[in-house]
Amino acid sequence: MAKLIQNGTIVTAVDQYQADILIEDGIITLIGRNIVREDAEIIDAAGHYVFPGGIDPHTHLDMPFGGTVTADDFETGTRAAAFGGTTTVIDFCLTNKGVPLSQSVLTWHRKAAGKAVIDYSFHLMIAEITDDVLAELPKMIHEEGITSLKVFMAYKNVFQADDGTLYRTLLEAKRHGALVMVHAENGDVIEYLIKEALEAGHTDPIYHALTRPSLIEGEATGRAAKLTELAGSQLYVVHVTCEEAVQQITAARNKGVDIWGETCPQYLVLDQTYLEMPNFEGAKYVWSPPLRPKFHQEALWTALSKGQLQTLGSDQCSFNFVGQKDLGLDDFSKIPNGGPCIEDRFSILYSEGVAKGRITLNQFVDIVSTRSAKLFGLFPKKGTIAIGCDADIVIFDPHIHRIISADTHHMHVDYNPFEGLEIKGEPVTVLSRGEFVIRDKQFAGTPGTGQFIKRGTYQAASADLKLLKEAAVDKGAAHV
Ligand code: URP
Ligand code: ZN
Ligand code: ZN
Ligand code: ZN
Image (cartoon, rainbow, N blue to C red; front, side, top):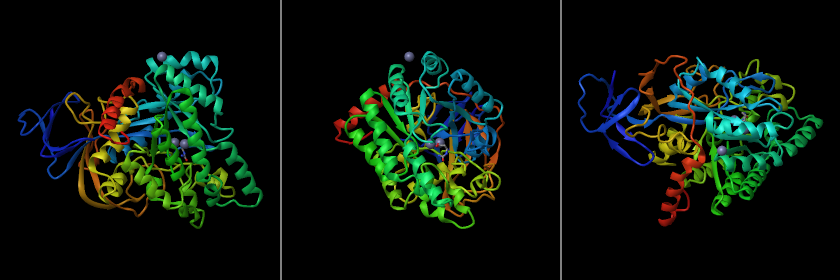
């Protein structure tokens, strides 16, 4: 049945206007004032914003890590994402040395199939470059539609790849039009700092932060940027936490390097002091890279508002406090790294960003949805509201005040790192390809209805972005 969203204020990355939206067969087929369609189901959005569904470019669902498996899988994770206003997630498909890429991708498809309630796609981890990997990559990129490749510069002896692997991945990405993503920390130095700390008897969660200084996140970011420049390739730096990394990304962009940066809500609103909480509670705040001293938050907000960082990922990687985080009770280096944020990413950016005047409403849409759609080959099918787009839509009440709490969240994990944070605004109704997933704040979706989305290449998408860059240069703007 057709649906008609009436009386809302449509907001995209570039526009804000009052209009109705007609949805047929999951697609937006008409936008205009006072649309009449008698056979359509009416959704009243009066007093509400109508946003394109959020796109979370960074999730880890059902992922084995740190001696355990994340608490949220594709069912609980995507359900919570939908409650929070996200309608597409791009999850990281792990790979192992010596195992065919196709086998790892199949494993990830099996994790998601029959479970996801919203659409999803995968990034592909590159652990090594071998003849087999080189032979398989074109198929992964062009046929499987997995057009972004992830290289870890940290997690020594687990995920970490060396600089040679990163460089060769950048070269292959350039050949095939893919986008390389990096976790930028210096894993070799961190390994040494952890050993030193443990030998000195330092086992508490705060040492997680103290052994991963921002200086070496900046160093790794700069190294990755230079290798990208050398390769003439393209780079996306995930979960940027600090001023040093922002400076490296900005300097590289100013030189013309094709580099993009993502940050996460935790780095925008939490700081390093959370790791000092008593009774091992600090373990709830163990992410890599770690939370930073508070002054870095302002650098991140400024970078988002100036376009030096362009996207917001949740880095959803949830572990229960009891039974999972406590694996590191006697040794901070054994605390599983990561936290739950898939549900709160969208609202935190609205509340802390738009409602507090740090970013505009259009910037909010760009950061939470449109930019990721463009960078990761989903645009214009997803990431905006226009005729012909998938009807992935969030009807958002900007007036609601609520308090984030594990008592009311929908993630399958026993704490919320943002517990007690007062939030302004909340998604009320969420549509995925025109079907209700959340209806008047109640779950209305069905596991298995989320579809895997084959994505276009960065190369194809960047034809658009380059045009925008030229237009911005003409107007004297620094960045697009
Ligand atoms: O601590 C984190 N960020 N856990 C997830 C894995 C990663 O590095 O993104
Ligand atoms: Zn190719
Ligand atoms: Zn990472
Ligand atoms: Zn991550």
